[in-house]
Amino acid sequence: MWATLTVLSFLSLALLHLMPAIAAVRPELVTSLYQVKGTDPAFLLLQHRAALFAAVLVLCLWAAFDASVRPAGALVAAISMLSFLWIYAANGQPAGLRTIALADLSGLPALAWALWSAFRPEAAP
Image: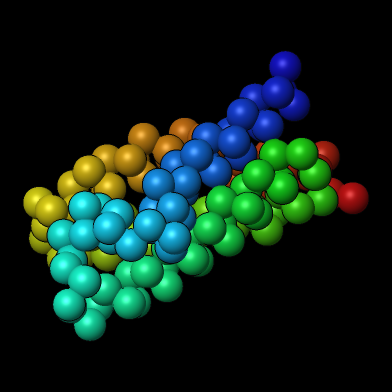
Protein backbone atom coordinates (compact mmCIF):
# COMPACT_ATOMS: atom_id res chain seq x y z
CA MET A 1 0.00 0.00 0.00
CA TRP A 2 2.79 2.48 0.89
CA ALA A 3 4.57 1.73 -2.37
CA THR A 4 1.37 2.39 -4.31
CA LEU A 5 0.91 5.69 -2.50
CA THR A 6 4.44 6.68 -3.43
CA VAL A 7 3.87 5.86 -7.11
CA LEU A 8 0.58 7.79 -7.07
CA SER A 9 2.27 10.77 -5.40
CA PHE A 10 4.91 11.01 -8.11
CA LEU A 11 2.31 10.51 -10.84
CA SER A 12 0.25 13.33 -9.27
CA LEU A 13 3.28 15.60 -9.29
CA ALA A 14 3.90 14.73 -12.94
CA LEU A 15 0.27 15.48 -13.80
CA LEU A 16 0.47 18.81 -11.98
CA HIS A 17 3.34 19.82 -14.29
CA LEU A 18 1.68 18.54 -17.48
CA MET A 19 -0.33 21.61 -18.51
CA PRO A 20 2.51 24.10 -18.11
CA ALA A 21 4.87 21.65 -19.88
CA ILE A 22 2.55 21.43 -22.89
CA ALA A 23 3.02 25.19 -23.36
CA ALA A 24 6.50 24.40 -24.72
CA VAL A 25 4.89 23.00 -27.87
CA ARG A 26 1.56 24.87 -27.72
CA PRO A 27 2.56 28.53 -27.27
CA GLU A 28 -1.05 29.73 -27.01
CA LEU A 29 -1.12 28.11 -23.58
CA VAL A 30 1.47 30.64 -22.39
CA THR A 31 -1.10 33.35 -23.01
CA SER A 32 -3.98 31.46 -21.39
CA LEU A 33 -1.97 30.32 -18.35
CA TYR A 34 0.02 33.49 -17.68
CA GLN A 35 -1.87 36.24 -19.53
CA VAL A 36 1.26 37.12 -21.52
CA LYS A 37 0.83 37.92 -25.20
CA GLY A 38 3.15 36.56 -27.90
CA THR A 39 4.52 40.05 -28.55
CA ASP A 40 5.77 40.44 -24.97
CA PRO A 41 9.49 39.63 -24.54
CA ALA A 42 8.57 37.63 -21.42
CA PHE A 43 6.66 35.23 -23.68
CA LEU A 44 9.86 33.51 -24.83
CA LEU A 45 11.06 33.12 -21.25
CA LEU A 46 7.74 31.56 -20.28
CA GLN A 47 7.91 29.20 -23.23
CA HIS A 48 11.40 28.18 -22.11
CA ARG A 49 10.01 27.77 -18.58
CA ALA A 50 7.49 25.35 -20.09
CA ALA A 51 10.35 23.24 -21.43
CA LEU A 52 11.79 23.12 -17.91
CA PHE A 53 8.39 21.98 -16.63
CA ALA A 54 8.62 19.15 -19.15
CA ALA A 55 11.87 18.11 -17.48
CA VAL A 56 10.16 18.13 -14.07
CA LEU A 57 7.30 16.08 -15.52
CA VAL A 58 9.66 13.47 -17.01
CA LEU A 59 11.68 13.24 -13.81
CA CYS A 60 8.52 12.71 -11.73
CA LEU A 61 7.29 10.02 -14.13
CA TRP A 62 10.65 8.31 -13.93
CA ALA A 63 10.68 8.59 -10.13
CA ALA A 64 7.26 6.97 -9.95
CA PHE A 65 8.74 3.73 -11.25
CA ASP A 66 12.42 3.90 -10.26
CA ALA A 67 13.15 4.34 -6.55
CA SER A 68 16.72 5.45 -7.23
CA VAL A 69 15.41 8.57 -8.99
CA ARG A 70 12.95 9.54 -6.24
CA PRO A 71 15.24 11.87 -4.29
CA ALA A 72 15.99 13.91 -7.42
CA GLY A 73 12.34 13.87 -8.52
CA ALA A 74 11.05 14.94 -5.13
CA LEU A 75 13.67 17.67 -4.80
CA VAL A 76 13.06 19.13 -8.26
CA ALA A 77 9.28 19.07 -7.78
CA ALA A 78 9.70 20.76 -4.38
CA ILE A 79 11.87 23.50 -5.87
CA SER A 80 9.36 24.02 -8.68
CA MET A 81 6.27 24.19 -6.50
CA LEU A 82 7.57 25.82 -3.32
CA SER A 83 9.56 28.50 -5.14
CA PHE A 84 6.50 29.51 -7.12
CA LEU A 85 4.32 29.65 -4.02
CA TRP A 86 6.93 31.70 -2.16
CA ILE A 87 7.36 34.16 -5.06
CA TYR A 88 3.58 34.36 -5.53
CA ALA A 89 3.03 35.19 -1.84
CA ALA A 90 5.96 37.62 -1.72
CA ASN A 91 4.49 39.58 -4.62
CA GLY A 92 1.03 40.15 -3.20
CA GLN A 93 -0.68 37.06 -4.62
CA PRO A 94 -1.49 38.45 -8.10
CA ALA A 95 -5.04 37.49 -9.08
CA GLY A 96 -3.95 36.35 -12.57
CA LEU A 97 -1.79 33.61 -11.06
CA ARG A 98 -4.23 32.42 -8.41
CA THR A 99 -5.23 29.28 -10.35
CA ILE A 100 -1.60 28.21 -10.64
CA ALA A 101 -1.04 28.85 -6.94
CA LEU A 102 -4.12 26.79 -6.06
CA ALA A 103 -2.90 23.96 -8.28
CA ASP A 104 0.48 23.97 -6.54
CA LEU A 105 -1.20 24.14 -3.13
CA SER A 106 -3.36 21.16 -4.04
CA GLY A 107 -0.22 19.20 -4.85
CA LEU A 108 1.46 19.79 -1.48
CA PRO A 109 0.18 16.55 0.10
CA ALA A 110 1.58 14.52 -2.81
CA LEU A 111 4.82 16.48 -2.58
CA ALA A 112 5.07 15.86 1.16
CA TRP A 113 4.61 12.12 0.66
CA ALA A 114 7.09 12.06 -2.24
CA LEU A 115 9.70 13.86 -0.13
CA TRP A 116 9.12 11.58 2.85
CA SER A 117 9.26 8.42 0.75
CA ALA A 118 12.39 9.58 -1.07
CA PHE A 119 14.37 10.67 1.98
CA ARG A 120 13.19 8.40 4.83
CA PRO A 121 16.03 6.32 6.32
CA GLU A 122 14.68 3.06 4.84
CA ALA A 123 14.87 4.61 1.35
CA ALA A 124 18.68 4.84 1.47
CA PRO A 125 20.39 2.40 -0.91
